[in-house]
Amino acid sequence: MASSTAPNITEPLEWTEVEKVILTRRSTRAFKKEAIPDYMIRRILEAGRFAPSAGNSQPWRFAVVKSPEILSAMEADAVKISKRMMFVLDYTRSRLRNILLKPISKFFIRLRYNELHPVPFGLLAAIANERAPVFHHAPALILLFEDQRGVSCPATDIGICGENMVLAAHSMGAATCWIGMIKVLMYDPKWKKFFSVKYPYQLNNCLALGWPKVASDGQVPREVQHVEWYEGQMEEPPRIERQGE
Ligand SMILES: Cc1cc2nc3c(=O)[nH]c(=O)nc-3n(C[C@H](O)[C@H](O)[C@H](O)COP(=O)(O)O)c2cc1C
Image 1 (tube, rainbow, N blue to C red):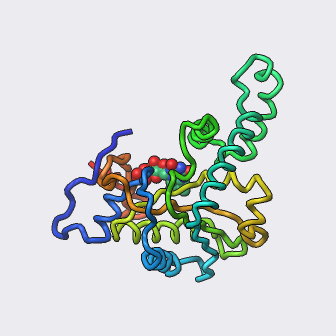
Image 2: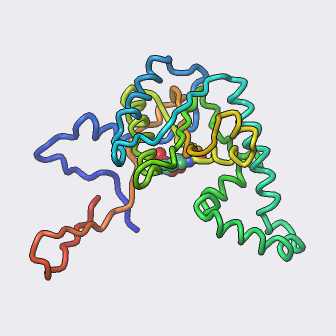
């Protein structure tokens, strides 16, 4: 599919400050050692707290992790758990494993398709082989817990809430990266207990937060979208506009 950066559609309205942050935000995977100050973290949390949610149910709980001891324990355990997962799931390493493990791995992959989709699976393999860090050595993490009793689709609410935080952070010159891979920690009851993860809460996602080591924000191409515009009579087909060209 074709892709492009945002085209020049600013007539008759220039990009607003909010749009500029949205268009230039990039995930950062190299952070400076020092954390951003607490007052900024509180402002970022405020952006999340004020996010819309279905029925205004606000189905979230947040945790900020800044302790170097806890951060390095999380990193070490996430690598350890990834290694264990790959030991069970990677059936390609030998003929015998291929015969014995393939059905089991395929079963797990079907069961947890989103988590074991080829993209996160590739990342899991890289983490297990210590080729990629999980938390990118960020000096702070914001954990987003989802209250499963939320109205309609609480996971959507968490996405909106987290992205509010992300955009607020970037508007202040800070950097972020969503860390979906944090979920591997939930395979270890120790971390569930540590973060008090029990019903109605589950860990939904995590944001790595800090100062970027190098300036990383800026526009990148995205897929051109074929958008259907319904503007006429019911029986008329929609007009297709190629958004992004
Ligand atoms: C829900 C979610 C989970 C993600 N999890 C990870 C992750 O575990 N590790 C990582 O390095 N990047 C992660 N990312 C970042 C994506 O890889 C990134 O957003 C995507 O490649 C687009 O790049 P950009 O954010 O720079 O525009 C995640 C992004 C989202 C939205």
